Image (cartoon, rainbow, N blue to C red; front, side):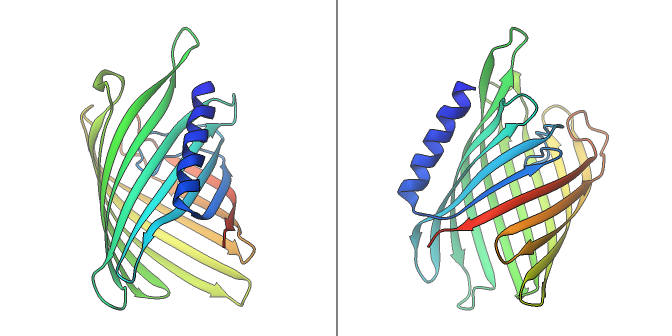
Length: 236
């Protein structure tokens, strides 16, 4: 757990330098990493930051660190230090290309009760097309690798997703996302999976969400049904 707190201090320091724009805290009934290779399978809490280091009309550089904690025992789950660059490909900003790197640490509890952090460096390429304020499409490709490899997996994750958002009066926003992804990992995991998620957000920043992911017959990618309650605080 000491490593978890140390990671949190490092992440907070990075965000302080990066001038955080928002902080999101949430709890979920079933922890699931963005890349569905690291499922916690237990209630989890998350703290995520969103901050700009550089921002121009066409380019931005963001620091997006986050931390996940297992709520059943207080054990740290993972800590990410995302650094992402975004480039608007048109003046309207409807097409955005992004490239990101992440030095991720997964906290693994050993048989002797001690906790070891396993580095999972990850890269991501993304293309987003915003058709209008209500509809957006994303194509993403991830590559992740555990160091040392004997304690984890390496491989690629490709995702195509469609998100639909709708304002409900002036108070609420409802969103739904359909995601088709393909996994190809060094442990033999290979195949397509589907995910459907939905969220309802109040203008105060409070939101509720649910997610359903089907099973693709892989040892570490099982069907996930998660319910989430969170709050996003904007920093001006």
